[in-house]
Image 1 (cartoon, rainbow, N blue to C red):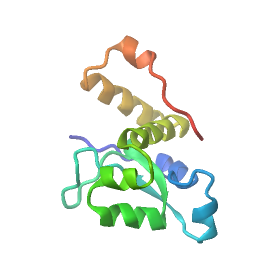
Image 2: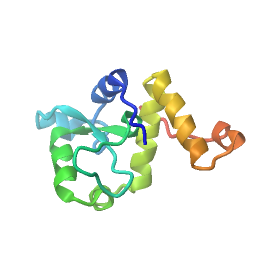
Image 3: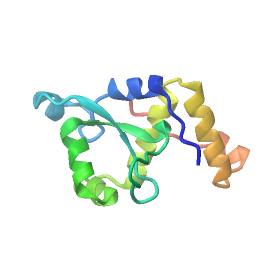
Image 4: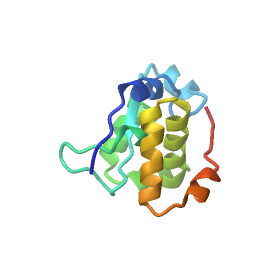
Amino acid sequence: YERVQCPRHLKFVRSQPCSIHKNNVHCNGMGFGIDAHHLMLQGGHAMGFKESDHWTLSLCRFHHNEVSACGNEKDFWSRWDMSYEEAEGIAMSMSLNSHSLAIVERMIINLKFSGYTEDEITGMRIPIWL
């Protein structure tokens, strides 16, 4: 496993509203900053392990602390009426919108490794909500 790091992408993610409250009214009203949250794709993190930066989405500090304390990321998303797959879609959307070539290239490599064909990747509809 090769973890891809991209400070430019993380800066972009931190400039976006909290993924829980997309209009950011609740989170900004509470004075929380925005963190780049790395999704836990393997069901959890080993000590010192994070997913590649292309699997990040924006969470205010309150929600970022909450997901860390929850222990089960799928349970966390369901508390906020979202599926884990929706969170993955938001992370993919942010990766494509950050215009970081390294991130997009890594996403394509990962999709190919997961068994997707060139035609399937080309035809994917990634939710763009930003």
